[in-house]
Length: 494
Image (cartoon, rainbow, N blue to C red; front, side, top):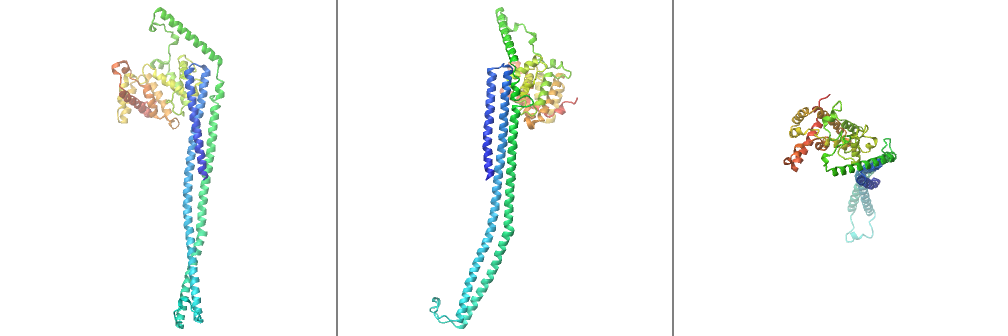
């Protein structure tokens, strides 16, 4: 059947596409990791090469998606084939039953005809015997005496009665046979042919739909490959290649060599003077202004008490990454993360440029890194145990009220930052149909990022056992999940 042959082709094509996609992703990721390790500071050339590998990885993902669509189409066609075979078999069985009725009627008609002919011949012989007694008796009556006229009359009447009965039966069976044939050709056969036509039409429509769907999916896959190679966002291969800046790479290389030479000379000077690293003079121009600085200090620089780095990263994610699968769960490239971090620390007015958008995971990784390097976590360590105790409450309403009470005691900087972040994550989870990141998944990621027990780290005797750490991490995730799921109730509207 054609549906099965097409399904077999789709299945083989899906296997080829899936193998191609997986190999493409694996090869691109391996090349990116090897390049990062070998050339951690490769300038614009390295950034462009990593972005080009990301393009190939994207094509691999699209091929896997295309493979899944082909597999679904193959499954639908196989199901169609089974249903069509089942319907045809049922129609065939019905047709065979109708054929049997007609054949049985014809067979019975033939038997009744033979019986009538036999009885007619017997009656003819009886009439001949009565009118003209045969000179030579038959072998059957060889030892009998000649029959009397009365006996001959009785024999004739009996044969005549048998012939009349056979004639009536023949006429009746003839009428039944004609009726069976009429019903078959006028009613049953047209119905069978109509049902076969309906099944054939259904198969034809389904096949055309699947082939049209295949054509559309194939075209879409090719179009997505084309957009990955060249698009208006400047993330295609041609546009990426134009971003290689040889002069800028040379300047960065010279600067890095100069910094490295300065550090070596400085270390030699301090070694000769017998000074320890703790006694070294700090260059105030290199002091961190964003990472590792208290939340209070950063919040004071803005009117709404929300640090600038959080607003910039969240805005970029909401503009370009809400539909990105695994947003905040997947990590970016270390070299790109460090580059964005350096831009924030150096006061770059445009720390997240267009080339950084080639992989939105770089931006989310920078934001998570900033939260982890805060001297005091977004959920202050002083309130750490209070948050965990609130998370242990079984009743959800009581848990929400307890968390709301604790959050209201936070400083303005912590409260404003937490409210802004949860509002952002609420938008992220609203697109979980596309990004697969609901409240539970986001809470698992941000539980450890936003909460830490500094007391346990500062006292060796308070070091947590593995089981306790696992339990605490689960409660931390519960805190974030509860806040995220009840964002509108916990935070008052401005």
